[in-house]
Length: 439
Image 1: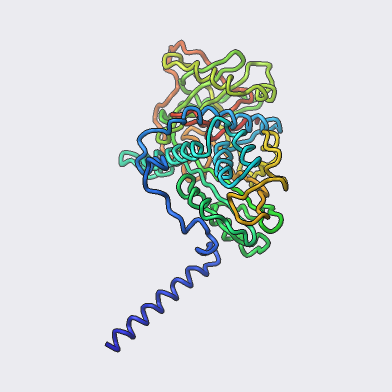
Image 2: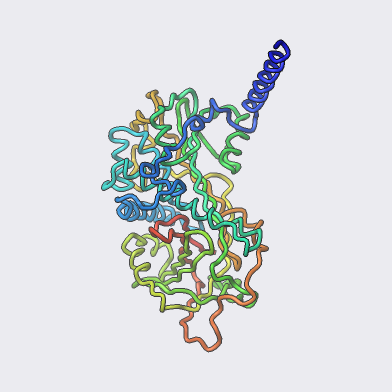
């Protein structure tokens, strides 16, 4: 009996020691710091509309959600494009982050967020639709990521829409907010001292990118919302070695990928749609008419123009597309989106007038910044990557791919001028990733 007690005590001590060691890992947040770790998602898919849990139908308000969120994202894009130059970002990250914040806001602050995202939606509808969209994006790519008939590199196919919320100081986050997050958004929510530089490794490991030095929190109780996207996939119709041609982009020599693609057009622009292999996404390239500056066109790129382009799609109308290889480097620091959001109508969200009474018990809780962490953008003969492109650029391509067969009468469309690129959801047409390529 005594021996059993000694063994039991020893085992208890070992478990306690292991637990203490795990909690003291300097490279990760403890359970006490990672507030979201104590909450699990409701398993009823009829409540959460989580695709991974078996949600078989979209929420009843999903079509309205798709139209409203797309309109909001295009507004963000227009404000980003006005700054000029090549860029890439994930507007849906911003929309999802703002949707989560709507649950923590009160009064005029919540009304302002809901007006920006779509005044026709309630927070319950916003939560259900956001949950379905995000979970479907990530679940479909995972379910199609590995195929015994493909190479091991195919596991690189993914869509990851990471959401994070970092709370400074001793802010007491409400349990109701944490449960709503667990049910619909799945964001990692951590509380810690921004001023302690020893937390750098924890934050960078949590988000999966070196971002801590780029965050600029201010004051006790401040909140940083962070979104981090990662996308990668091969082409459904791959390019072969002979599907490459030399031409010029903006008057400079460039390598072009040649393929027969679906053609789209409006009164002022034309483009193509090209499908990825495993993700529920399609690439849309849009080039304004000759003589039209890309910035001037971007100013008019609203829901009406977007719909005209997509509605012009026809399976029988194709074009011989010459697409330049694209590589937009990863920004050195996270992109602060407050300026763009203010231009989109969110005037008080970052001011001392903001009310986050549904997020925290403390009156000092204030949104310091909403950051967008982007990995850059690469488009080449193998696929499209907003991820670690180096690990998959050597993937096998077809021996003969998408170049138009000899004698084809397809119209030629050469993207020799600045253009808009987008990766959009096949089901809802919500943009997931977009930007401008100028040089």
